[in-house]
Length: 302
Image 1 (cartoon, one colour):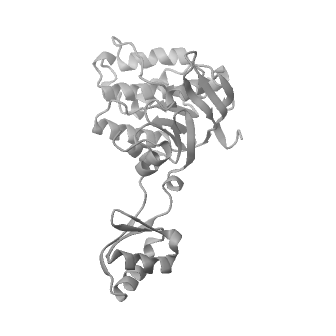
Image 2: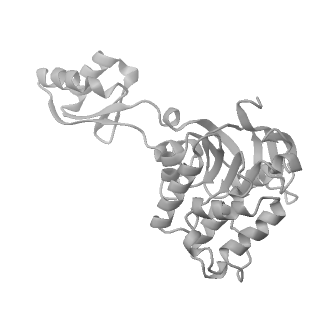
Image 3: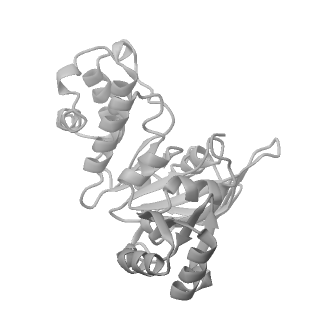
């Protein structure tokens, strides 16, 4: 598995002394070279899981292998860069000076500081004190610090937290760029659009349990066709005959067809030919939002 995966967990569990079960028997695999989205609502267990993966806390039970090593081992940490929760730097030092301190502690070469500043587009503001940085600049400097060792695996915990829309877009682009080639990015988020735009695969966690793990495309499922027609009972009867009852469902006055949108011409021809008026006929696919709420049991708008 070492050749194909960079993170493997088996029944990984964390129960705190208070009795709170934060992470419950998580079996997760992250493949080399992908951007993996660890998706779940706030309090689902994302940060606790990531903290276990980098050795900041110990699991109550279960096992994990990260970059071929046990979590927290020096050999494994040498191949990992991480930004867990908020970046912590000296406010009175400049961005560049802070990274030089981190480079010394991490055993990275000082010339790497300017390289990572360029990667996160902070070169022009690297001389400013960290305490004067905006939230977005602080997050980018945190990512720069995580990249100093040129890691095989980059672990980012809610990297767009607290950013305005422009900052979020810039961070998404940065993560996409970082995730090119052989480097793996493990990204936790509660933002559905973020994960859908930049991740290859997704693991959905809810109440400490990993409830799904697949590609975004597999999670969303096949495309289909929406039909609004009158009389709707007659339309449903015809569509049942064409595609089978299992492919036809009705909701909010619309008929949902689990079929390829390329059949839209045939659908329209059959319905109109049978005297059914078609007022709407369009392709659709489930959004990641719909899937997420279905998997987690959360209510939309909660």
